[in-house]
Length: 486
Image 1: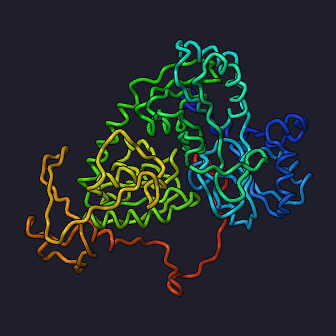
Image 2: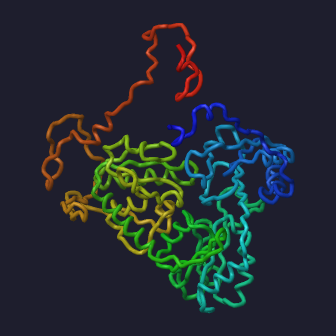
């Protein structure tokens, strides 16, 4: 009867799995998918000997071709420590790689440690159908529209713009810009662009896409047309330019649509998370990247911002996040995730405690920053010199600023600490906190977390008796070979 609801255990044990590697892919197919020739030219030009290649679905035939036509030894990365769209430089350094070749989807976050080459997957696009959908969505030929896209469709954007530019004089097709030291795309070095004005035109460069606006117009005067599937890339654009109207075309289903109310709902959820961050006393800083440039700088800035707001912070490095991992730290009131722009907007509805972005935590702790239509997903823009940097408010010692929580209705303090708070020993004594809230118990969750430790991996040299090795069981847990025998 059990076999009606699950597979037979004997079938699982006796099943034959085909693990043969298919290496008979035609060379022209490999060249089309992986740009083998351009990749090898990039490797040989810089005389790299060890190369780390990153695939979304590893192809050993492509790796063999790279090794055959170059003087380098390629290493395939089996899995990433964080998001698959990011370049995992730490894993590359573990094998002593001299450069990285990243295949497939990418968030284009700048990296600094190793030379990098992007090879985007050229996914099929029906350009005629896409142009027809564009005309249906924008019947007014004088509309100001910017074409955005997933990186895997960049190869078709020039053809799409050529079909539409004659009818739509105000159409702008964004360009792909790869920033970083010795960064390449499809083997061609990308030109470095400055975020300045050229010919009196405002240059917008965001998430690896760059375009220029006409004189007298701002970004809110334009509509956005996105080519690609619904996902993190589209959501990232819509959150950043949330006052622009968005339409999209999905090449896999060849359908277009107008993106409507979802962003307003998402912004309301993010504002609720900011209110939770204001109520929090203990903050956990989650390190969600080791490859994006300036991630250490934003961590230090967040620590200082959280401390100045009178909160306690702890830093966690735990790789890919999931609910059980974060559930181990119930003493933390809220988590802030340091990651690339596409991985920062984490849906924390299933987590026990909210997970916010650096921008949202800065909004909660920095009295000088006010909620407006702007939303920042790239933490590098929050650093000094960034386009969205707001310095902390100066507050005289002894001043006390309070407001009311929109969630609990309780009165909360928003005073900034000018110096490091006094550390008290771990005890249950009552001490003076400030003149408004009078007293507080130092036996807090933060103190308990500082004292927390784990046991079970101690060596215990000389304490464990030496025993003779014995033969263990054979098979799998649901059906050991010796089960059912006398």
